[in-house]
Amino acid sequence: MGALPTRHHLVVRITHWVNALALFIMIGSGLRIFNSYPAFARKAETFCCYPFAGHRIPAWLTFGGWLAGARRWHFAAMWLLVANGLVYVTLGLACGRFRRLLPIRTREVFADMLAALTGRLRHDDLTRYNAVQKLSYAGILATGAVIVASGLAIWKPVQFSALTHLFGGYEAARYVHFFAMAAIVFFLVIHVAMALLVPKALRAMISGR
Image (cartoon, rainbow, N blue to C red; front, side, top):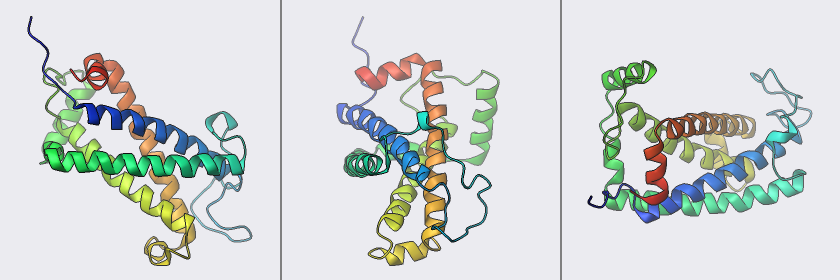
């Protein structure tokens, strides 16, 4: 039996798992930071559209122990995520990896979504993305850019005042940052579930083949 074809380059696999670690730390520490004041407005101010203001995230979902500890972890993981993301994006552009995400056709997205829900979506060729995967991966790349930009806007609202203004102010930027995180968590849940349903995809991300 011949050797299995290479599915993922070594650098792609390394950046994938580094991203997973960085996201785990950032999500947990970010929730701990949020718990220090569980609302999107500054103290003594109000901001609409969050019905759970004042209610803390369960402690077991957070990371960092306390506010200062969570901030240290969050900013450390932030630089790791950004540096790792730049390597991944550079490789994707240089190798043409992102070209596999296009085109994204609405008709194909709905067809593949229906096939997935009815158990008829095929996974024979892991070198090709189906339409739902294309939409999901393109969407998570865009969400990653939004969460980094909104994070900068709330981290340094004076130094990045133009960026903060672009998001509609500090409170709105914090709102965007939180729900971009929620979108990433939703993606991760689906991503892990699909990896468990298609074990050879998980093996390919570990061994490359």
